[in-house]
Image (cartoon, rainbow, N blue to C red; front, top):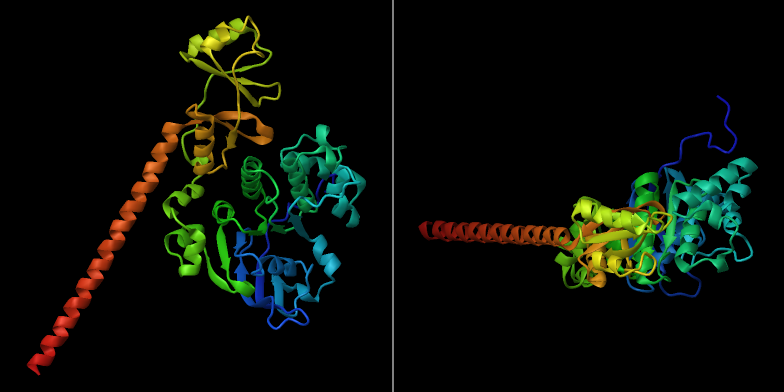
Length: 419
């Protein structure tokens, strides 16, 4: 069957395995290597986070995977192929790379930035145009609105979305991300993290992600590599395992206090109860909005903008005082969460808004429902109760071990006495 213009001739690429075998980087004149004999296996479609103190070698290790930094020893295998023997330029075109502050070319439009690698790979023009639109839609940006903008015309969060779109444009199996969300404000960062989780659920790429933020590592990672100096691996395990059983004091220092509360980063809004609430749009006449409130027996309605995004919370009393204008009434929606947001994100949003609920949004910020503080607190209580139960079971197992050891010692002494 011939390929339709502008479409892919094969299914989207899923992730590839990555193996680091004795990976080492030594700079001339340095007494010790910057990265020393790293061994690691990363599964296809897995998100692995490198976290460690500044200067420990995590970014150097990441950059050796696509040979932005050339290793001085060891091997890098991607799907079993030794990429240290490949042409490095060709290698980089097959690996997505996203960095802090997006790294967009300021003289190129959004579309030109995204199209860069596909054009280098000599994709047909129709296929490139289609791919640019696909990528903008994938990262939640309207192609009609953003296609011809320049980076200076975008917010920091929008620039990062375009940076991720560019990294994914050529459909690489591997995506490397070097502190990509470190330069944006906390709310935007939370939303970008949620967007990455959603993208990964759809695309199943192999992602290697560098961060200094352990909470970010817990939220995003299938596994976390806690790195010491020279990228020596202190622990490489799931977020749950590291939180509940840190390998040593160094790892425990990264976990910090409140490990039970950090587990809120492991549960998603999609895992708890999302409900609906009465909604209206800015174009709805006031009598219709009041009828909707009466029909639902509610005291509050969520006003949506013309794109279906949460705009304002309107109480019945606000509506009675508007003089017929919805635009002049109500309280602006300060924050929203997505289904991929964590319980911690949702709780922070609810407490910031101090209204007992937060709107849940989907693609391009469209309204999907609400989650309330009661639902969130029930989930928190369940997590804490599970932690208490686990702690009691651990104490019980320890007491049994001590009793067995004491019994064995007594038996031993008794045997000696009889002898």
